[in-house]
Length: 293
Image (cartoon, rainbow, N blue to C red; front, side):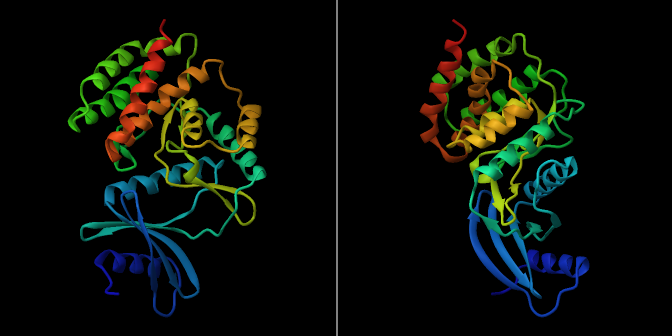
């Protein structure tokens, strides 16, 4: 295999960071959202490498480092991040994985609760990042309803209109955007550091039995938004929810707001992958609007 410019950049970064001997061996692991995945073996060591758009990978690296600094959730360590030519790269610690277990899920629930209960200064984040490959705007705000309306719901609806999804989706979306304060009557969320993309494919279990999370889209928001996404695509084990609620009980209105938070991700899937998510988005909007009556 001919070494690409960005792969040379990875190798130089590793040579600067650690002692390696022999020749590097690159093994393709296939394509993921936004780029390719690689297993790099060199001098008896292994690393997990992503290649793709430099800005996307830089945002992911910063998110992983923020989660690690919070010292609640286990994440793969960031070894190197950069770009060479038109391609960015992200080198991560290689983690040996085991099968899911209820015990690991319970530990994840407790750890996430600890992270969520640590207060942050404002909603948002210090930079734009990405949800999948879609830009995710995070301009800091102290008004959560305004943040959700402008930087989550309205932006996804704007993208959907640009992608040809007008008509009923935009009509129902406008009604929902206007009605957002209703869903927060008596509930005042506090900003907390969120993983931001916490579905079942973005966590795993290490061989020592501990949970690990990856592929974040971090920002500071209502902790319910993280919990809601865990329920969107198949859900997490029951032990996860029991442990989380034990350490961080949820407000009674969570069941209603869960659909509001997950609508953001369904709209994003509509914008990323096409019309198969249109009906789901409309159903979710209409259910939410029915709460107004």
